[in-house]
Length: 170
Image (tube, rainbow, N blue to C red):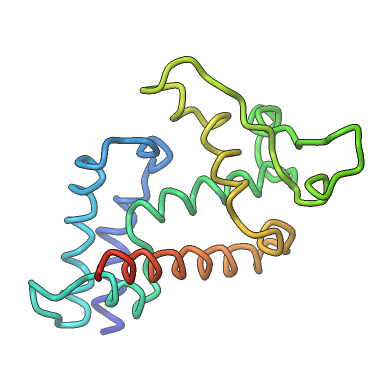
């Protein structure tokens, strides 16, 4: 299982992760094609049958589905840019939301979500989509250290994957 997992990560996962920032906001049928490629890999690693439901196998292997991998990559770049670990041009795209009054939301590390006029390409821009998904993750995840951030973010996204599987199963 370990050797098969290494081969899968070397040949399939790296190809799915390459430039996956560009995949954010794609139509669902395009993401579904990528997900079908990824669904073959866990079946090969765990010797599962072709018609077994793939979400429990992904959770067991601690692998994120394609849509959650895209979110993970975006959120990690937001975290790196907010902590000065990314190029300055990415850091300049993100602004913290502050109010002149004393509000509880001032302490939640939220980002300003700019509006855009075009839905097809404007919503896919990093400056628009990154604050939108950053504001949805828990505060303890946002404020953790770099090593803990990746771990807690992946745990959070795996929990979301579990919950969405449970909701749509019944």
